Amino acid sequence: MTSIKEQAAISRLLSFLQDWDNAGKVARSHILESFIKANQGKTAPELEQEFSQGGSLFLVRLTTWLRLIYMTGSCLDKLLKSIGIFLSAVSSNRYLKEFLEVGGVLTLLEILGMEKIKEEDKKESIRLLQVIANTGRKYKELICESYGVRSIAEFLAKSKSEETQEEVQILMDSLVHGNPKYQNQVYKGLIALLPCASPKAQQLSLQTLRTAQSIIGTTHPSIVDCMLKVLRTMHLEVQYEAIELIKDLVNYDVCQALLKGLVALLIPSVKETSKLQPKILNDSSVPQFTAHLPVFLQQAAAAKAIGVLARSNTSVAEELLHLRVVHSLMAAMGNTDHSNSQRQASLTLEYLVQMFPVVEEHVRRSMGEGLYQLFLEPPQPRAPGSRPQSNAGDLYMKIDSFQADILAANKVNVSKALCFSGVSHCNASFYRGAHEPEKPAYITYFQKEDTEGKE
Image 1 (tube, rainbow, N blue to C red):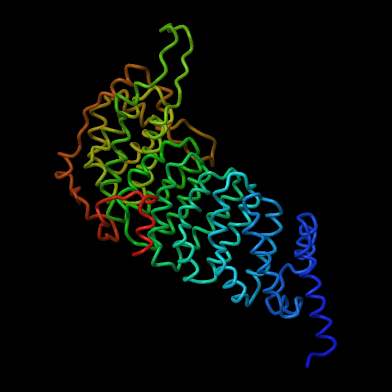
Image 2 (cartoon, rainbow, N blue to C red):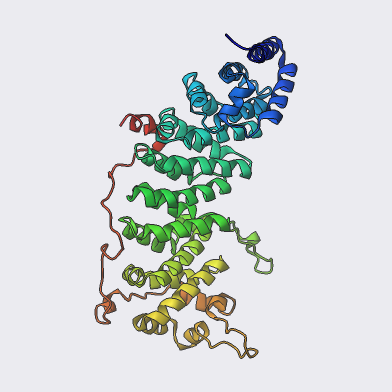
């Protein structure tokens, strides 16, 4: 027989639920606001005590209303936060199962794709998905089986809020950890994000890809082409993350293809460079302003990446020499249409000249003594205690059009001389931690996600 105190508590619960059932949108909004203020951070036992062991009765009302009104976006922010109080509470497994049983995950994913819903509401949906994913492996699998990776990736690409995009990154990172059944699906979804128009989404995808790559241990063939295209970005933060991932990828079976691709980017095709804006009336007296073509941004980034790789791994530097990187770097140094390409190529070539005597010999012979001395001109005297500065990076400001043509038309080929200088060709076996190649046929992630989910 229940006590008077218990009867009073049950009566209050029934009265509260009746008020909710009879309330309109405005009244329910006030109820949710009061609930959030009073119960934020409570554990599941504390919530049960608050609702006289009837917390599930209120949660089912919240989830039912969510299904009814989420397309309109009315009170969605407060409603999702209220549901989050139940799902994130300590010892809330029962609440979580009840939410999932009524299709909670699908509703949250559908919210991400609704154009009329506010960005802030979508961020709350992402946070609830984080709570669900962090609960365990089977919940991560449930999200992936519900076409979650596709919905989440598309939202990351389209979101206009950097704060929201960072929340999405946290969710993607959670899905790639402790999720062996679907970690490849997440990995391919991240690769599919690289061509998107959002620089922030590209940056976050590259960061998460580094983690995913180390977990999966094998590469997908499509990653090379995607990485090379990312180098066309004008955003330095994206370029930095791309080069960091390239440094990791040289330890995998795509290394040879990646190095060949980088070297090829140093000499853009005629088709690409012909897209330059026509000179104004061909009048030399009129200042000319060359547009920063993506292909030239890509050229400069490739030269920078090659320098980073060469400095970090001598074996990689040797392999690059066999790919005629010296010839390509000198050609980039002669690109008077883009000074940063000239600068990055000069700095990288300077390192190779200092590291390999055979490179120094061929570069000196091709440039001629005057241009070579200008290239490696000793730094001017500086104040005591100050660090000397390299002059190679300033070469583009010192050369004339004739010298630029010498660089652009160079025929340097150190490959034949390498075998006589003790530098052996290591082919594709020089990279560390070689892995078996993945399936050769690349299937677009978004087209095959449902098939892979059944594996």
